Length: 458
Image 1 (cartoon, rainbow, N blue to C red):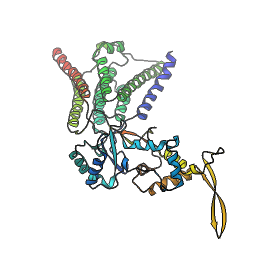
Image 2: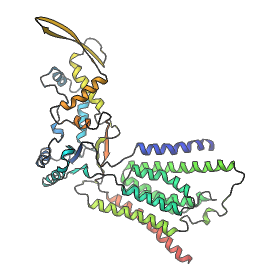
Image 3: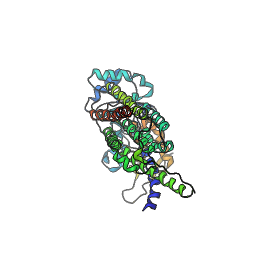
Image 4: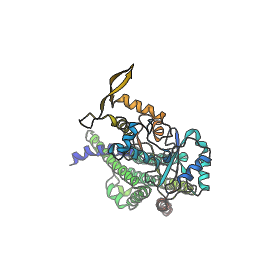
């Protein structure tokens, strides 16, 4: 069993890092390369919203009400007529999926795409919306909150400086800090402060006799981990799950280091051992006031940022983050460029497929007759669903006679994958603020306790 655990531990550590990076949720400062996004409540008037945008002098806005079939063929064409007959067929799923680009993931907000050239007019549009009693917002204010990873990095530096086993602490702090970089949200930052202090405690009693029992018996360590996990869950269920993955990966990483040290010790003729057991060592180190005080100060700064951010957020209906369509991990609920290519293929070839015999779905051949000097000439037209067809459909997007959502997708390039990305223009809910306060209280309690114990010893 121990042999299998030695192999599994490093694998799980690497797997946890892979999961954290693969499922990262990053607030994007600019969701689209060539467009900004205005969002309004779904139950608000589309006509009023469009008028507010127009009154701001914005041209070229892409809206749901302004969408038509993504084709440059006329409504009198045979292709268009066949489509209307087959509009409910599975081949037309893309038309329903493309509409999802005009709503956030929860469909609480309706979206309007504004060309980057018109971005300077968005504040006027938001003012116009407010004047019409529509609580609108935009993604232009969303940016990566560098202050949160920066605070955690500074905390790591301070704790590493005072740690008795510096390399152990730095190695164990890698995954929690990476998790915060990949999920840079306020509650996650508060939770990371608690986790880093716990890892600092572990590094101080590393390899000492009875360390595990001592840390579990020291009620501050289990309490800090529980509070940290609960705090992360108030951000979002996914954030809580990611912190659990990070903790599990960190535990396996420490186990891997422990087994590696034992292996190298077995090859050495002399192995020094710690004389004093873990219970004789203060987990917070000789400079307890400095380390616990730094952790408490970090949590207080994050709490201040939370309160300032929440007070500065207007028009938000709830504490939920807003997930908007963007170039992210592909989501099956959104139409992809490949879906557009397949729809275009079906739209253009449907009139020419034989109903009497089976045909290749990716190859169509049909006769075309032309008159030349009184004679009828027949030619065979061959169409193949290949890269040339995809390129032709992609290039033809610019010929649509309206502001299509496909133009927005094309602005991202051929590698575009439609998914959802989070904005950071959201307030922290009451429960999140309460849990953040509890995190700060726990750290302040440890700091005050350290000061009191230091005064008693004197």
